[in-house]
Image (cartoon, rainbow, N blue to C red):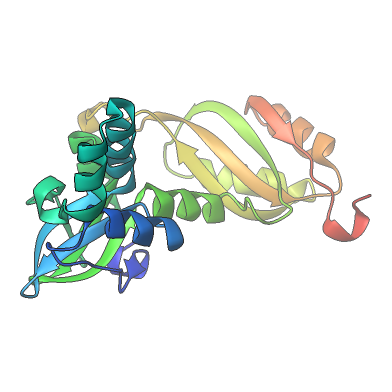
Length: 227
């Protein structure tokens, strides 16, 4: 999965001499979380909604008319932006993007192709990607298997057992803890199973009979049958 295929393409960008009050308006009206600051075709900084909200709240708390007037009419983006922000490349993988965000504690990255800003990727895009993967906007049933060691053929066996019990599989997601110890062999992971079935209890029983513990299950009726 490559960043350019999942990023918010052609993002709104602003020059460094934009008033902070104008940047705040752009963020609010476009429901954005961050604005790349671009001068002379190059990324110079990043302004986030969270930073502007904190700054606005501070100015309001001072109850100083001069500071409020300065904030609204004179303060420029270049004065408060994050300079030289962390970035990712359009051809980076989503795995690289997620790891970098975790390491740096950063929730949004401008995306570069050469020196040109071509997109932005943020926790919002990651959330939507995860929601699509899990079928959050579809009517899928699902269950979570207790941690199992993912040796060769294990996921295939889970799929075979579920389908033999009448399930129509939509996706399997192994979810484990990253400990960086790849030499230890296959990790134990919970497995999220997304499926359609008219008999969730039967699927659960079949998996348990095959030796897979079931931690939880959610039975969602198809839309046509929902009341």
